[in-house]
Amino acid sequence: MREVHIHRAGDGDDAWLVVRPDSATTYNLVALQNGVFTTLGLAHDIPAGSYDQIRLVLGDGSNVVQDGVADPLTVPSGMQSGIKVKGSFDVPAGGTVDVIIDFDAARSIHDTGNGKHILRPVLRFEQVSLTGAIHGALDPATEAEVHAIMGADSVSTIPGADGGFTLAALPEGTYSVSIDVVAGFRDTTLTGVVVTRGHTTELGTITLTPETQ
Image 1 (cartoon, rainbow, N blue to C red):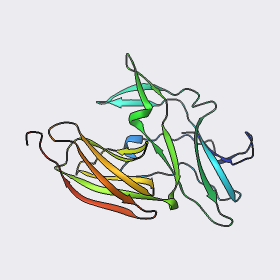
Image 2 (cartoon, rainbow, N blue to C red):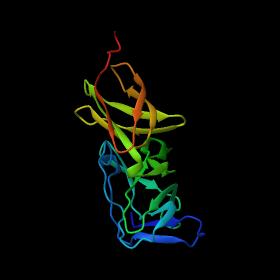
Image 3 (tube, helix red, strand yellow):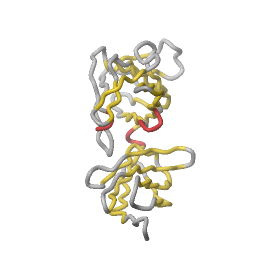
């Protein structure tokens, strides 16, 4: 990551403000899940108002690491026009606002064969004060994907080694939580999971059913 810009709503293509100047840093996106975040940009002199886009300007050298082997990741336009993420957030006069960008790795990275990968990013951003979260744990801890689904939108994560998971930056509403287990246990879906802004909905321990039962 080299630069981060934000766009003021209604001001045309030239209304981009820099919240991270040219300062290249490498991030391990796999480590940024289950409620783990890092700061991409910070600015103290942003004019109050409404903003509708974030632009991420990437550097070279992005990779996909599988079983300890690093393969190059092609990022079309990532180093020129940047990756643009649409949404909305408001900067209050004399105040601050935190915005979270969520990167869906499973839907963003495509294998083109011969060890080559291309990035077609699926990202969203949310104003932190308007979101909540879902937390739970799988018993036993096993390899799985957990999805929070509301309508056509979904947010995903992979539980940690202890089985714990957090689905963060969720707009308030009622979700289904789908647990897709890789092997050995049945998939599970919890319905009617309510998320309210500023709070974490606790699911507790979710006991998985072996496939043989």
